[in-house]
Length: 62
Image 1 (tube, rainbow, N blue to C red):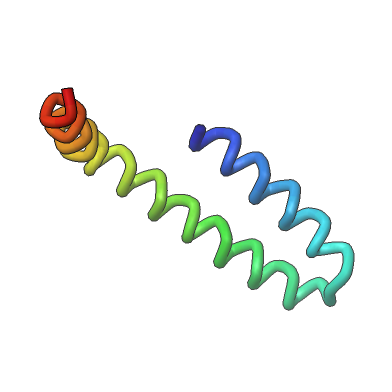
Image 2: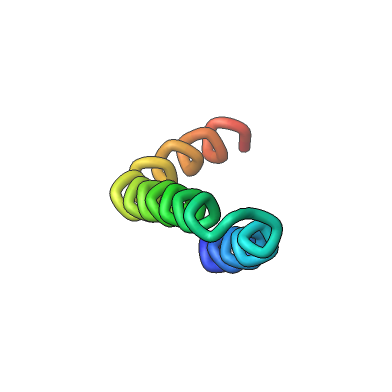
């Protein structure tokens, strides 16, 4: 799931890069990479808590 998101963001950034100036495109790519790293870090750190939360919700519904 996260890998697909990263690949999609990479493809989008490559298409966007072709449409802009070099410096502006590089700034946007750096911003996208930083956001992707934050999303990955949050997913790794909060993954077990989120899984436990939805497990409790699932147990409550059954």
